[in-house]
Structure formats: structure tokens, C-alpha cells
Length: 373
Image 1 (cartoon, rainbow, N blue to C red):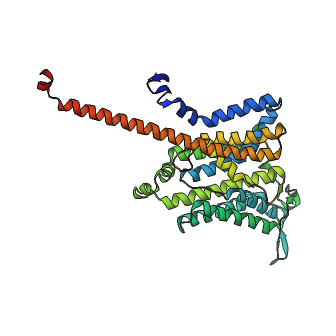
Image 2 (image 1 turned 90 degrees about the vertical axis):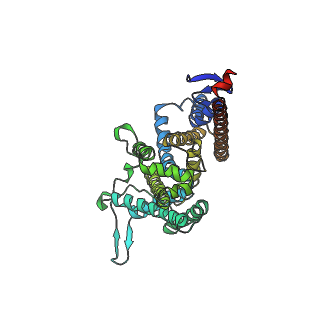
Image 3 (image 1 turned 120 degrees about the horizontal axis):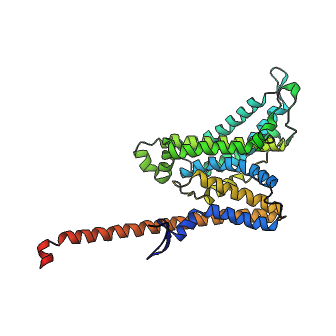
């Protein structure tokens, strides 16, 4: 069959109908549409400076989306990542501004490396709590992560007493400078956050596509019971994806705090919705078992360009919230549409197979003598 051919069922591209092809490419199409619209509304949208700035903003959404992708592939959901973003930033703020150790009556100023490691460990720990609630206590992922979302946000508020930690540049005298590297520095002309996005995207893509763990993800999301019977360590897989999601959220929180040189307990609010929308726009199924890194990245660019584009053209913040909610609803509707098309194609193929098998049996039952008679 040629790449594009006419079939009795309609125009097809490869082995897919036009509708299936458009559904599969919906993230890329949406990104192109956004670029055309905002470029026509603002002359500065496609400038090099603005593109780099927008990509920097996309980077932490992409990191969140990569963690969310792994969770959604198993059929789960993680609503706690936005709160982990705020919690990791607050922890960085507390440590960089100095911690009073009452036992020794001294103020401790950990190095930036220690700050980063501790924040990542805390994010991973919250993810581990999610995994334990889901795998050991059989709490539904939505409920488990909803609870930890409030707990992590509450912890950030308790630690900071609701205040923002400003000026996180550190001081050379205390040996805690260098935090700005994550959000401000530009190695080889690109922000550090963009390099981190590229590195982690490659790593996750390789794991999903080539490692046994990647096959386990799809198996668990496709049919958890069948995966368990075939020897897949389902509970271990789920624990790991929630821990990775928490770690990625903590990294995103550190990048944001570094970029703003300030940490606020309210940081990261609604970021979990952006990540879910990006993954679903990119073609992943909320039911699990379908999705890839390329789609999640394109979805993150769609959400990021939409946010920055609306700000650039002066759209009200109220309309921005409304439009982001609309995008999430449309993403889920498109996902349902794609599933219906896939089920329809599978049913049609099964019917064709039955007809071919029936015809083969009928031909086999006709003997050469009957045929000559």
C-alpha cells in the first residue's frame, strides 16, 4: 500500500484512516496552530529571545510531564506534583537562608549540592508515600495523591509559616552560592533547565522504549492482572514511577526557585493539571498502556506556548485560566475519540479476518470432484 491511498473505507495514510492519523498527530497540529495564531497576533512571538524564554518555561513543565507520563502509562495519576514543587522550593529556601540548630546553638548553611540532594530526596519520599498508599493499602491513585497533595502543601506552609524566602543567591562567606545555576545560567547558550529537559527526555525515552522496565509500564497499564500473572512486579513498578514523579517535581521546584531567586509555599499550584494536559494532548491514554516521550514533550510545548502566548498578547488572567481548563477538557475528549477510532478499526479488522477464515473453510470443503461437476 502506498503512503496515501484510496480504500473502499475512505482515504487512508499508511494503515490508518485520516481521522486516526489526525488524532495521533493532534499534539503537533495543536502546536503549529498556536504558533501561527500567536505569531500573527504578536511580532515578538517568534523572536529568538522570546523562543528561548518560552522554552525555559516549558522545561519545568516538561520535567513534570515526563514523571506524569510514567505514572499514567501504568494507569495511575499523580495530583501531588504541584505541591511537591512548592515544598522542594521551601526546603531549598530554608537551607540556603540558614538553619538554626538549637542543639548546638549554631546556624548551618549547607552547600548548594547538599540543598539540591535533600530537596530531591524529599520529593522522592513524597512519591514513595504515594506508591505505598496505592500498592500496600490499595488506595485509589486519585485519592492517595489528592491526600498527599494537601499534606505536601501544608508541610510547605508550616515550614515557611506562609512566608516567601527571598534572595536565594547565597553568600560566599557561608559557602552556599551557586544556586542560580539551575535557573539562570546558560551553558553553551541554552538555559540549564533546557539541558536538563533534554537529558531527562533522552533517558526516559530510552527506558520506555528499550528497557524491560518500559515494557512493564505498558503491560501494567494495558492489563494489570495479566501483567502480574506473567511475572511483572506490578507493585514495584508502581512504587518506582511515583518516586520518579516526585523526584522530577522536586527538580522542577528547584529550577523555579532558582529562576525567581525566591521560594514560595504556593509555588506550583495547578501545575499537576498542566502536566496531565500535556501528557494527554501528547497521545497518552488516561486508562494507561498508551503514550510516549515525544508526545509528552510536544504536549508540554503546547501548554507552555499557550501560557506565554496568552500573556504576550495581553489576555486577561481570568481568560487564561478558563482556556487552560478548556484545553484539558478537549484533550480528554480527543483521547476518548482516539480510543473509539482504534476500537472501531480493531473490530473491522477482526470482522475481515472472520470473513477470510470463513471463505477459506468454504473453499476447503469443496472437493476437486465437486468443482468439476
